[in-house]
Image 1 (cartoon, rainbow, N blue to C red):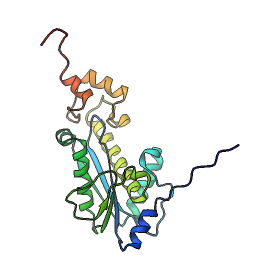
Image 2 (image 1 turned 60 degrees about the vertical axis):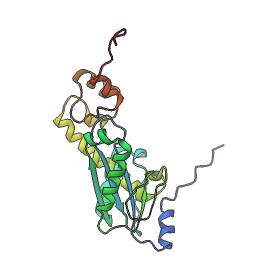
Image 3 (image 1 turned 90 degrees about the horizontal axis):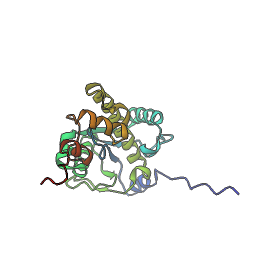
Image 4 (image 1 turned 180 degrees about the vertical axis):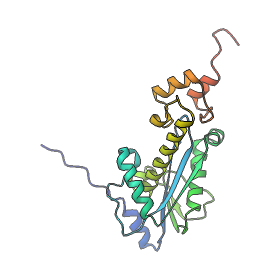
Length: 217
């Protein structure tokens, strides 16, 4: 017997509710690059037109690269407003990924023109934003405006990592995008870190500050 299929998620439901409450410019914001060992953190903020459908829109992590690229182009072409903010690797290293995410998402939202009157931010409260907002956990799989922001942030960051691969060949940034894959860890052990590596991340720190031999203080 074939099991029943999972109910289809309605990614527009919360936006419709907010519009019934009187909000008109509803933005979604999300980041890409909080976890990697190298590279920047990138956040996007997007206001989508209420009437337009984006077929296949979903959390960027659930989409194959070609579909992400196609959707990113459609979002950038048809969005009411779109903005991107970048936190360099050195700053992510200094303030940590959570604070860097909050900073980037806040900057992206504040750069939107027109300014939103409500914001859905993926799993991050944004203190000091000055705009009503919610921070649903897993929002990139629940709300279309957050999904759109996650796609744009991921595609923009991937492009940056490909550019960094040309500047720092040998690490494989174009393939693993800075994440701690076996290829990346092997290159890190062989070449040592470059300026794009986050030195407080344990695998990088282990290369920069190798453990002393047993028995030494």
